[in-house]
Amino acid sequence: MKFFIDTANLAQIEEAQNLGILDGVTTNPSLMAKEGITGSDNIMKHYVDICNIVDGDVSAEVIATDFESIIKEGEALAELHEQIVVKVPMIKDGIQAIRYFSEQGIRTNCTLVFSAGQALLAAKAGATYVSPFIGRLDDVSTDGLDLIMDIRQIYDNYEFETQILAASVRHPMHIVHCAKIGADVMTGPLSSILALLNHPLTDIGLQKFLEDYKKGN
Ligand code: G3P
Image (tube, rainbow, N blue to C red):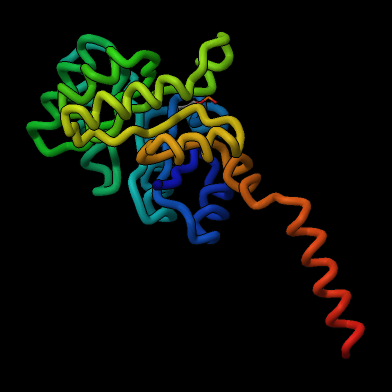
């Protein structure tokens, strides 16, 4: 399972990269705004900065919502760096654009996916990644993990190559459950990844080992 970090914060991306377990980065307009990155030139530069830190795919989201503009924006993003994956919303023009990009060899991440039917469409269009938002489904009392299971089954039935990128991950058990189901990738905040480290028996055991070592030396 690939680990992506869902942030535009360069310090956090660097921390995850230095940990040696990072496979990529996902961003969205809200995450860019959170870091105070505004204006097309600054946003483009920030994507390149991210690519220069991480060894792996970096999802950069288009703002356009009509086919022609999505193509123009997506091509400009793809030209920025070979690691860029063009993130396209799950709308009619987005699906048409994903098909176009797929034929041009431009990799895509179909975002804002909340149903199995949407994920099927994204795969049919040739998306490289599909991003079901599991945390946001949980927020409205719908089990996001059920969606990951449904998509896994559908993609396996037809051997779709689109990778399931479980997004809107909120906590470590989301990651564990996604791994059990067979999601190809997870993306979430660094805190959810670091929380995988925690177990009280590890802390107790380490403390005891260190104490016993001191006694014998
Ligand atoms: O980047 C897409 C997705 O991961 C957003 O997550 O936490 O804003 O629902 P969240």
